[in-house]
Image (cartoon, rainbow, N blue to C red):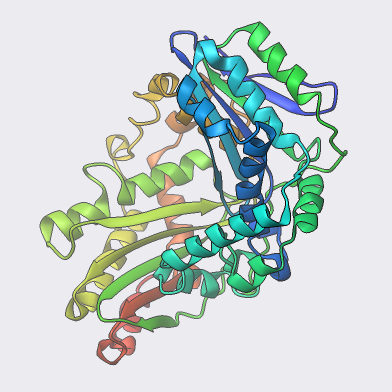
Length: 424
């Protein structure tokens, strides 16, 4: 059985690796503990800007031939910015591991882009802001309420005003601030050799990095967190979209517990909310949600679109389902563990998913799984009684923020408040 392994380079960077020689490709990630959660309002979105600029900078270091080289060798190179981290990743056939390692290590180089190149990237980001539905989205509307007066209320991509403040000098200073020895790490999965890992480490060791403390993924806590007043927030719209958002005290719950609770409600063929509200009642076609988690706090949220006249009924059904989880003990077979227990080792078959899962769970959230087997056992040990206990703690009115887009004049807030009162 394979285990997660770790090497620390001579310049102080952690390189984690989890091997599966049965695969035919490699997957290398560089994770940076940065994001809107750590940003000030003046430079909101600078992490996302850095993501763009860093990749453009790599292209420049390759004499503007990066993209043709990626196509030539069938290599994928990209990045994603989250509220608390950035993931850069490169993948391809295992025989091209050294090329991928060279590409991703160049992200550690100083940004030498000219003003015209920075401005071109700025235009692209502004286009991204313009083309998104961020301003009108229910998610953005909700985040400003749930995370009021904290950095998490801001958009990951920033605003036109904050993006205009970002200069080449500001980006290079920011690069030095976040690409410090303890604040970054590499993660390698798939098929590779010991010499491949050694080669990657040698390339990382060429970079001049400052010493720095590791950010611990502790989120700013809103003043009304866990003390919600039961208000209903409505954004006027021509259609009805309802969102439930519950505060989570993540010091009390494990990743495994929250994944299973979420799946019971929202994932799988037999998830409670989907079966009752879509399959049985036809109130909507689909329901979406997520569990947003940091070391100390988080949210569990879900949203669905219904007709305006069906808002009270849909809210009442949700309340009944949540209360049933608090009152009734599920059979162990209803706890949606198969994905994590029966299918545990299928994670080996997907080097990208294994890479992100172990990077995030272990080195962002601090789960410390030593292996897929260890992770499997964590999920297997979650009991129905523990799920009922967690549901009783979370699904209470003081943890709930109910937001919606709807025709304001058609929303009977008092009627909905009376329904929500049953969530005690």
